[in-house]
Length: 237
Image (cartoon, rainbow, N blue to C red; front, side, top):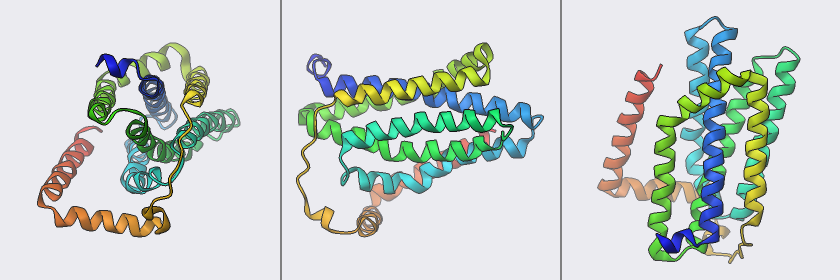
């Protein structure tokens, strides 16, 4: 653990992840309460917002993971947070002009960006952290996400109720901008062209799915995640 805490890449990525989790949950709760206010607690609108937050995870997580191995991970995480910051400005401009429905589109954009930047963090760990510590580093990142699953709604609700929508969005812009700037201090990643990069991403995705279906353990885990996901989706609303 001490060795991890001395690793610059680990500290930068963890610092950025912490900011991202604060930003993601502040965004989720602020937009949720805003939609509830604008639609008089319409259940269809609330469910639509939740769907748009999680649908990109289902569609783009596999694609994002494939491209994480192909793109420069430092540029991906820096540009990803910068685009998230810009999407917050876009929301603010559109809401100021009375187009409150824009929050749905902005939610999709922000969620898609996350599916490309998050896998790149794991790639950075594999390239800049000793092999025997990669598991611990990824485990800490997963624990941080789990903690924010509990604390995130509390924090997001507090920020929204105390600051209101516009100030919350400005705070989000600042959070994602700082995260993007922090990751500029990551070391440059030298890309060695591998055989996988000569194939199309679609072939990579297809081979990944075939690999999963050929291994019973992976199929079993996928089914469990599917069941848990369905259960979570039913109970959350």
